[in-house]
Amino acid sequence: MQYPDYYQVLGVARDAPARDIKKAFRRLARQYHPDISKEPDAEKRMKEINEAYAVLSDPEKRAAYDQLGQNYRPGQEFRPPPDWDAGFEFSSKGFSPEETTDFSDFFAELFGQMHSARRGGGGFHARGQDHLAKVFLDLEDAFTGAVREISLRAPKMDAAGRVHVETHTLSVKIPKGVREGQLIRLSGQGEPGIGGAPSGDLLLEVHFNPHPRFRVEGRNLHLDLPVAPWEAALGAIIPLDLPSGPLKLRIPAGAQHGRQLQVRGKGIPGDPPGDLILDIRIVVPPADTPRARELYETMARELAFDPRQRN
Image 1: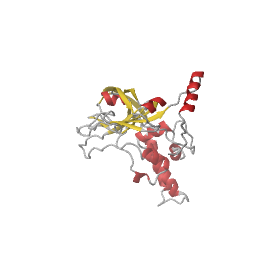
Image 2: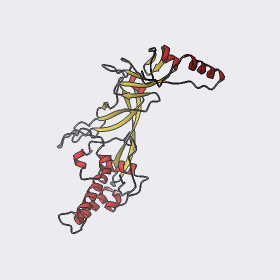
Image 3: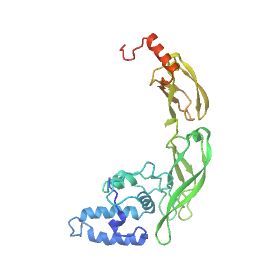
Image 4: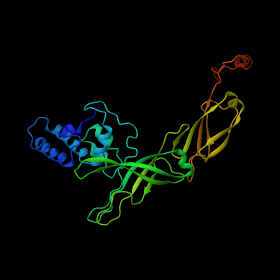
C-alpha cells in the first residue's frame, strides 16, 4: 500500500486554509470531471481529486492524515502503526466499507476503520453528535474500578480555516468489570447541540494495555504457567498472584506440557465473571553444576524413560 500526497494532488500547501482547499478542488473538478473533460486520464484523476478532498476538507481526517504522514514521501510503502488512533477523539464522520469502494486501499485502511458514533438529529434544533475515542487502561482497573485522568486529542479549525490538534484531559470513572471493547459513556461531553438542543455524548472504547503476564479474551484471563518437572510429575500447590489477589493453584500429578487448566470465576469480574485459563509450560532445570549432572545421570539410569516411545 502506497502513501498518497493529497496536498500534491490538489496542488495546495500543507498549511493551506479550508477555503484554499475548496477553491483548488472546484478548479480541478472543472478540469477533470469525466462528463466535460477531454483529458485521457480524466476519470482516474477525478477519483484521486475526490479522495484528496474527502480527507483534506474534513478537519478530523486531515489531522489524522497529517499525524500519520509526517515521515512519508509520496509513493512510499505505508502501513499504519497499530492503534495509531488511540486517544484521538472522532465524531461520526467515518466512511462505511461501501463508501470507500471508489477510493484507494490507503483511504479504506485508515478512514474506513475510523470510529463512527451515532449522529444527532437534523433541523434547527439538533442534538450534538456523539464523539468516540479509543483509550487504553491497565488490566488491574477492570478488577478494582478506578478514576483515571485520560488525555484526548481533537482536531479544531481556527478562524483562518487551518487545522490544529488540541489536547484536553478528562477525569473518568472506570467501572469494575469493564471489558475489552466496552463503551464508557460520558454524557454531554460530545459535540454541542444546535439551537439549544443537548450536546452529544463522548464514548470511550476500552482497550487494555499489554500485560507482562496475562492475555485477555473477553472476560477470560490466559496465563502461561511455568512448572518444574517434579511439580508436573508429583503434583503441587503453586501460589499465584492475580489482579484480584493471591490464589493457591493445585497442579494435578502427571500434568503434561501444554495441558490447560481452568479456574472458574477468576477472570475479569462480571455477571457471570470470566475464568482463569492456564497453559502448563514445563521448564527443565539446566545441568550446570556437578550435582545437577549427577541427579540427571541417576534419573537416566533408573527411570528407564523414553519420551519418543509410542504408547
